[in-house]
Image (cartoon, rainbow, N blue to C red; front, top):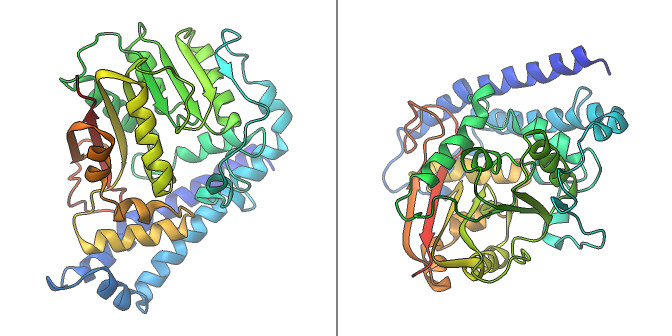
Length: 352
């Protein structure tokens, strides 16, 4: 397909998604405004499942994502047509140790059992998968548009501003780093820190290592590893981070990841995660549970159902702080006008 046709197709889908975000969602929320205090998720679902507006809203959410990835002008066919040139354009890592891939790596069954986000074949499955994921992530939050990276900058600022982080050049472990959207702001802000970033998907790690090389960063290690088994030494890092990882894991895996974070953190070290957890109203919960089904994210509801503070305390963490997070200026994270993810900052400390 021609470049201009691909760009036009993706721009059209983004414009429709903005309409979905700013018009269709508020119309549904206005209907919920008349709900009584006794209404719960099941009550709302019983009403909405036969509601024409909701069924149209749900159809658009499911099929806009499908067309974004797999349609005639979708991300997957566009990148597959150009696979050789795009993969060749990725730079070699800065040092031989900067990109640590395991040709015998076995993906967890929960990770390969579904095409998460409707990404055809999964983000781990083919050489261009990391590039597809990177391009797709630019429009995941439609109202941020070109400011999407600001979300990660804001999160990094919140972590570095945490008074519990007392080391000026902390050793950092970034879990589920993907193509380095979450890692990049840390290597930019902390050039003196050593950063290990792990992910299951080799194609994403190649994109991440290439970008670090372009930035001339030699303080990075990108490792193909499970967040439950990172390969880091005991008590070797001061800070553990993740962005949008917790809701991608089943309960047992998430708890094992918390235990791994505890193992690798030095006493007094902190872990800070950005994910989706705080849902102020039953309507918010209903919308996000529906999103998890329509977007092929099977473990999101399990995270909503979990006793997250209890799991963290049981692991041994203290000073747990869970708060709503604003992804941009002027957004009320507890009562947004338009559709948005329920961003939640989840922070904790390993006792000294």
